[in-house]
Length: 266
Image 1 (cartoon, rainbow, N blue to C red):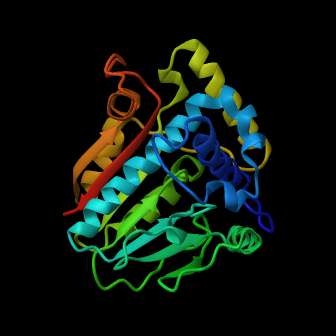
Image 2 (cartoon, one colour; image 1 turned 60 degrees about the vertical axis):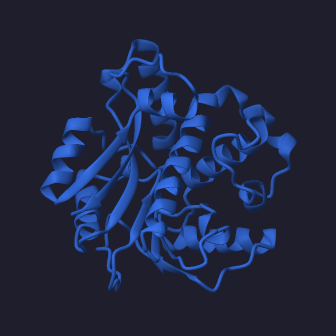
């Protein structure tokens, strides 16, 4: 994103979440605040139907993340950290009374978000706070005295490899920390039609100043996580997501695309 401006891809991701509430009635991931934070009426999102693939991927990644978070809370985790929070609404519909939430993002995006929340009449909970940071220029610092759960959604492809590694090192500093993040495989791994569609989308986000910078393959991610003492890895790509959330066991296991991953620092 460009300094002095809110993230436009954060708006796009929020729009996909809201469109899922309208077009699929939140069947995969329910977010009752998605429309309110955008200030949209349901009929304004009907035109998102052609973007079904990305919309359902975003719904599935949030369902995956919040299911794992709920399991962590049941084990005693009391802090959730939302990295690159954008217009994420979890902190404002948090169903876990014992869980505090820390949202981390660029200060410009945070200021824009707080304007959206105020206009939508969405109150700031007592058990959440904001921390402003530029992930590419500043090191992440938090005073955490116990294991936390990190939600890192829709961020990794926009980071440099060094920016990704720096944040991963921070998450790895406390034994027992857990993290969910998503990543994209290289377009070169995809069939021609899907590759062309992905490259077209990459060109669009690059044009607004938020280019995709980093792609990974599953074996690369597994190796990096192992280097930082992460284990108990669950990595769902197109095949795993289709089987779990869309009753589609027919998608070949080696299908390339977006992945969502959960892991714990051992």
